[in-house]
Image 1 (cartoon, rainbow, N blue to C red):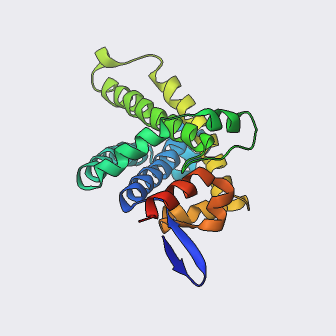
Image 2: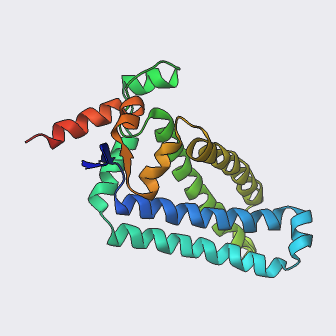
Image 3: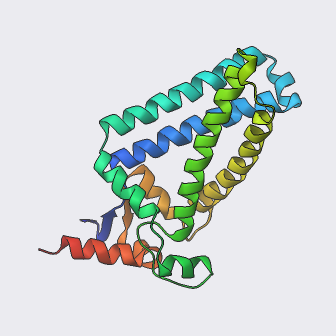
Length: 209
């Protein structure tokens, strides 16, 4: 914990966690933009360089996988494993929160846990269907008839999840301070007390001698 100008700051995300988030976020935005240009005829005509867009889409996907692997190899794997276990754990307070009841939450609330799990599942499905789309063009034995349909629907789901994520992190007054955690690594204690009470209590316990 750190205090600056009478504001107590609680460290929330490590450098490795933030690096993983921004690698995924920046790659996804490029993939979404190039994918939409390939998918929508109006955008494809506006850009007019479909082969280039396909190359951007494929090489960004490869760079995304390589960057994720680099973060996992060079970063704090112990912290990432602890975070994964934390996200995968749902207790009674989480279930109550999902039912619309006011329940104290840990470092991640139940909605954030579900969003992280769904995002990870979508990333895996994007990678698998994207591979079959790419390799199917080169070897027709691996061409799956529904791979493109699944890939497109994954794009729709991801797009609306992104809109909700951006609204909560940039617009909604009650939650937008959370952006500080993923950009600077910390949040104010007063904000954390309102949104992540159990986590604050845990931090206080661990900070005691």
